[in-house]
Image (cartoon, rainbow, N blue to C red):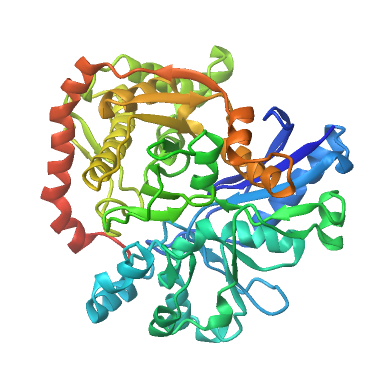
Length: 506
C-alpha cells in the first residue's frame, strides 16, 4: 500500500492524516496546543508545541493503526499564515511566535506607513502593511527584543518550521511569501531594495521554493521521534488556506474556497497577479496561480468562543440527549428567522483583517432587547460571520474577480445551518467536498505531485476531491438579508471612530 502523509498545523490544533492515492483517509488524528494571550492584542504560540503535537500524533497513528512507515512515500505540510518563528544557527526557537491575529506591531506599521506611504509596500508585495502580517512582527522583535533579535538566523513560517524539524533544512515556500513586504508577489522572489528599506537582514530570509518541491528527507532525529523512515521525501508545503483550497478542488480561475476554520474568509483563484489593498494576495500552492483572499478574524472561532462561554447547560445535558453542545446550539438557532429579528453581530473578535483592516476593531452585538433569546445570539453570531464573508466577496467583485460558486472547507462546513446561512447571505451556491481534512489533502497533493505519484495537479484533484453536498441559496431569504447586511456595514461605519479611540492593544 502506498500512502501520503499530510500534516495540517492550525491555530488550535494540528491534524495528521495518512491518505491513499485516491484521497481516501486511512488514519487520522489530532493534537492540541495552547494559545497564549499575555497582553491585550497579543496572541502567540510556542512552535515547539506544534512540533510535539505533530510527532506524537504521527507516532500514535503509526503505532495504533498498524500503518507501516515503509508505505509512506511522501510528506506535505501546511500551516497557518503570518507566523514569525525566530530560530538561531543551531535551530533553537528563540521566542514564542506571534500569530496571524496578533496586533502588537500596530504602532510600528502605522509609523512606517506614515514615513514611506502605504503604497510603497503594496506595490512590491501586493498586500497592505498591517500588524497581522509577518513583517511587523520581525520589526517588533528588533525594537522590543533586541538581544533576541541579534541571535536570529532565520525567520520561518508555520509549515516551514515543521519542514525544518522534519528535515533540518530551512526553506520558504512561495505561498507563504505574502507575509513579507519585501517579497515580490509577481516575480515570486525577495525584493532587495525593499528588504534594505525595512532593514531586515538578508540571512533572515530562507531560499524560496515551489510548494511541491522536495526539499529534503526525514532526518535521523525526526525519524526517531515520529516513527517515520529516515529519508522519506518532504516537500516545501504551503499556506493552510491555499492547501485547503487545493484540497477542495480550487484550481482554475474563478473557483473559490470558503474558509470555515478558526478564521473565516475566502480565496479566489486568479491567473494574474491582481492585487487590491482591501484584500490579501498570495501565490496559490499550484504553480502559475494566485489567490485573492479575504481573511477575517471571526470564523469557526466565534462558535467555539460562544460554546465555551455560554453553553454550560448544553454541555451538562449532551450525554443524556446524545447531541453535542454545538448541535444543540444549531437547533435553537434554526428556530430564529433570517436576520435574527434585528440582532446584528460584528465578528471582530481580534481586531479585523480584510476588508476594513482595523486592528482596533471590536466585536459587537447590536439590537439587544428583552425579546432576544440564546437562539437569537447563536444565529446572529453565524450571520455576522456570513456578512463578513459577503463583504469580502463584494470587494473581490469590485476588484474584478468573478465568483459563481463557493467550495466550503473547515469545521464550520459541518454545520448545515451555518453553511445554508452563508449561501443565503451571499446569494452563492456552496459546494461542500466530502473530505473533512481538505488542508491536509491539499498538502498530500503537493507531496504526490512532488514525488511523481500524480502526473499533474489536475489529475490529483480529479482523483481525490469528491463532493458531499450542495447548498443552493434561497433568493427570497437573500433579499430579506439585504437590509440586515446594510445595517451590518453601517454599524461598523458608525462605531469605527469609537473603536479607534478605545480598542486594540496600543
